[in-house]
Picture 1 (cartoon, rainbow, N blue to C red):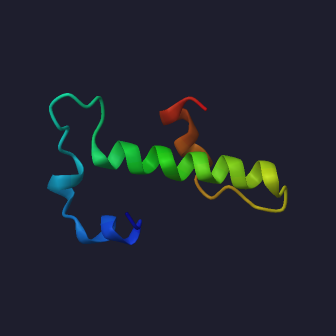
Picture 2: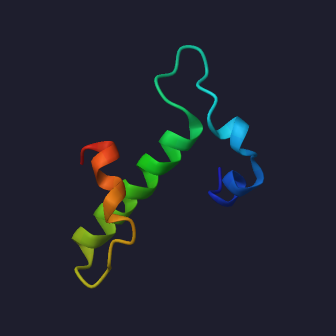
Length: 60
């Protein structure tokens, strides 16, 4: 799945928590984003993390 697909979803769908799953689509997308930011920064110290305030939501 491409991340740009998320832009096509409406906010209502992003916040649905499917039965049997612990998080919403929005939460999972944010977790993937901040994890990628963290790993990119570790690999290249010149890469600046754009959303430092999001890290607290995912306890990296």
